[in-house]
Image (cartoon, rainbow, N blue to C red; front, side):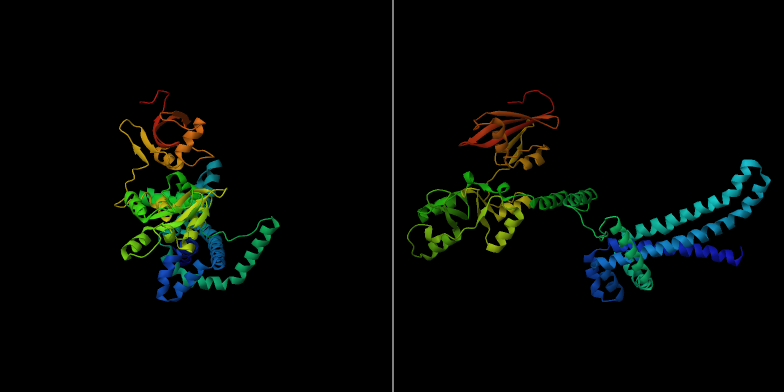
Length: 452
């Protein structure tokens, strides 16, 4: 092998490596995490400053990627020219004699074979060593790759800046001619559904736990919920009349173990404010003088519409520095109340302290059926039982059943619905006045009657 052929072979591998360098830089710039770069920025070296600029500036990132594409194009074209000619030069002596000795169609094939083999070999080397390997390597360690390539890539970008700028202007002109608006296409912007899929994949790969997945999904769904869906309804509120004595309040607090009570005048549509039991304890402990009722101890309440979005509700809690709000319906009447704890439980699940006596809203029974609290949200029942129930007018499962009955429910009323190929039976097990307090739910894949 003469020296010129050896130089050509070395040139081929150099061009493959150069192509791989530009590919690695492009993917590293897109995949590098800003938080990781911020950590590395403490080192105060030039490479970190360059990469940080790539990550933080969309314009700089687009310019870098355009320069990478220029480099990839130059390397690929040069590789195609040099590689195929060199490979053909290596293979031709081996096949030339066989081609001369063969006649007809076989001779034609053997004559063309060096060009075909050279194209196959060069393309294979280019795809594997110049594309796939650097791409995977840079995605495995994007920050490290970006730091390694920062200075030479920065110099290349400066050197070819006029050419890159010209190509970018031409591309923008063509896009506008086609009626398309050029945008920065390399930023990682995801919809909520895409983020949920990422979370699901993270759980499947073992990066996060199932409980963490549920919390993240709850956070994503929180912005679509309104206060009415998480509130304590009016019928379940524990309130105090304004003329109640302190002894009566102490007795109620000891019985319910609650720490905040709405105070009303006449009826629940006229809430005066909120009584905090710590104010009551202070008065009793210090023996302060008062008129014997809770009216003077009442603090100003936060009133909000029941349709307020949950994220806006959180903002109102922060602004007013309160943890409880009275929710009003469209007519100005009291619809219910909501607390900060209710919102936290939407994310973390039920939080029960040593004083909580509440039973789970959905409990499996020994016969395969379920006992469900009437105030459980329809979506919570869907998640727990794998159903797909919905109702445009009601949020709770009790409302869902009442809507199907078309009247005020009575004890032992039954409702059957068909859901995704299954029959779902609801039976009213307990009433609280005119409200369904507890239901029994059975799911069957056939028409057999539920067990009683």
